[in-house]
Image (cartoon, rainbow, N blue to C red; front, side, top):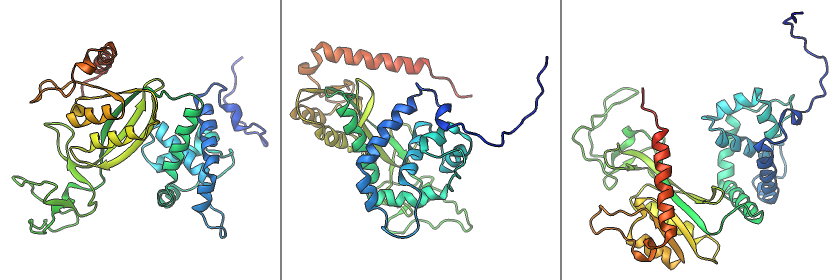
Amino acid sequence: MRGADITQEALFSTVHLDTFVPPDHPLRKIRLLFNDALSRISWLLDSAYAEGGRESIAPERLLRAQLLQVLYTIRSERQLVEQLNYNLLFRWFVGLSIDDEVWSHSTFSKNRDRLLDHEIIPALFGEVVALARKRHLLSEEHFSVDGTLIQAWASQKSFRRKDGEDEPPEPGRNRARDFRGETRVNETHASTTDPDARSYKKSRGAASRLAYLGHTLMENRHGLVVDAQVSLATGRAEREVAEAMLGRLPKGRRKTVGADKNYDTRGFVAACRKMNITPHVARHDTRRGGSALDRRTTRHEGYRVSARGSESALKRGLAGARPLA
């Protein structure tokens, strides 16, 4: 007998959101670890809010929602709020019931400055790393370091001469400028809307962009990020920040660090050896002066295994690449 396509809403419902989440869903373990870290910085959250006045949205819920935005690469806070309205998994993770009203996307913007001013995000990240280390989820021996380009929100039109002597833009709301034949470098130019942004390109042949650099230090056993930092976009920033992050690692047994050819410099290699860290960086043999690595590192089987692993990962990445339509 064919069933009828009739939607009949129940007058009352006693189903909890927890029943919709599978017992083995990875967000369950993430939520437990994240809640544990939040409880450890509760004193810091208290200091960010006044003792009296109207009760705000719980900062724990805002932080859980922002974690979802990172984990699921949701491109905007407006879209995050939209998904919180109908995604039962997201509601459960944040701590909202099925009847709770979702706040406006502008709430994130208003609270972002508060979280930054009181350095809540770095403290929360540090607690998560400490808990992972306590639960033996971190390796203390093998690490990898890398940097990435973070494009600034400043427009190329805002990159003007510091002395103000460049040609004025055309009239109109969206004023255009002709940069043809003009040499624009950080020494003589700066953005009028974001002075800290630098004109930078990641590789030869790439277009210069107003950007910052993001740096991460990852342990290789479980693939967890143990340190992260943002810096000005300069040619030496990747190595200088990497040295600082490696210096913050717990002292003890000898460590190794993997990195690309950009880190194959005599200064970075010497700094790693001074910290009792073996630099497993890719050799830059084609550069003038050759590689900074010598037989002290390259003669060991561990370095060759590391190099083969990096080459295999590169081949897998190239094999999975697809041409643009």
